[in-house]
Amino acid sequence: MAIAANLLDRQFTAEAPNQRWVGDTTEFVIGESGKLYLAAILDLFSRFVVGWAVSAVNDRHLALHALTMALNRRCPDVGLLHHSDRGCTYASEDYQRSLEAHGITCSMSRTGDCYDNAVMEAFFSTVKIELTDRFESGGHAKRELFEYIEVFYNQRRRHSTIHRLRESGRVRAPSAIRLEEAAMRVIFQTARVGATKKPLTSGDQTGPNPTDRAKRGSKRHLICDGRGVPLAVRLTGANRNDSQEALALVDAIPPLCGARGRPRQRPDCVLGDRGYDAAAIRRGLRARHIVPCLAMRRNRHGSGLGRWRWVVERTFAGSISFGVCASGMTSGPTSTRRFSRLGAR
Image (tube, rainbow, N blue to C red; front, side):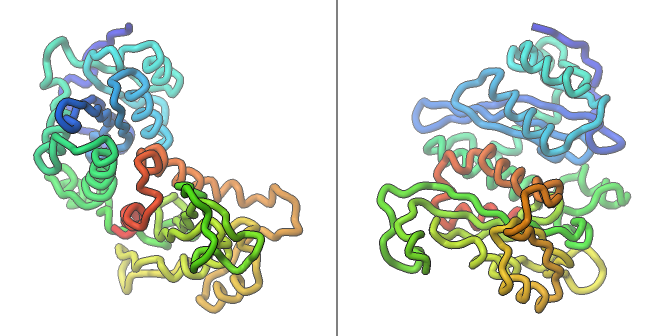
């Protein structure tokens, strides 16, 4: 195991995002005697939780999952300083190899000195005071931690560091998500989730196409901005055609404030794959004063939209890495509302 020097030296500030990250792991009680471990990484510039992961086992894989989320979420430049304690998970060869591969400098606390990583200790204390330190089950813990970290802490919670940065104009309020700053690209995508035990044979979710009847599972229809922020999510039966939800998704985008004037609710342009190539969709988008940029069915693959549409794939992958799909949340409307609330803040 590699032990690094304390390069951070209790300097818990940063001049810009992705300059200094701190990470640590804590445990929660599950039921009577079970345990669940939470690994998290914070950006010292804004106290934003850039990566986190939960597991019933506190090993290097847990810390690596949190680091992977942070790297995929922020894509930091070479020179980032990563600080943690001297635990075996952070000193492991796999973790150190991942840091080195991304050009990240490692810093570690001194032996037995929790004050060298005081920001992470304060964060975990806040979580356990404002949320809880005990859960009924692992699935319940994943849902509540997702709701607290992604919906509340990263988007809404106020604390002194963020307040000072907003006053100086160095960071924007989370609620100021503006469509005009999202590169004017809204992306459609669907994903099948949560297969049911019995196929649907009747009802509103069986769809008009006879060949689609009795298709198992449910389908999440997602529309996000050019940065991957989810704007609206709809949950339907797996046999619901993608194109049937396109205009409903656009209409479900909430008003997003932040710029001067009335909050915007319509993007200038919408991207989508060839599954949304329909004259009715194009007419509906133009009637809403939105430019449709949809791949055409007769054209070969490689039209160039993939370089923009990858963000929606990342958003779907992010929901899985949060443990949402594993906990069964995607099979009901509750998870859809929680997931869509990320973009409504």
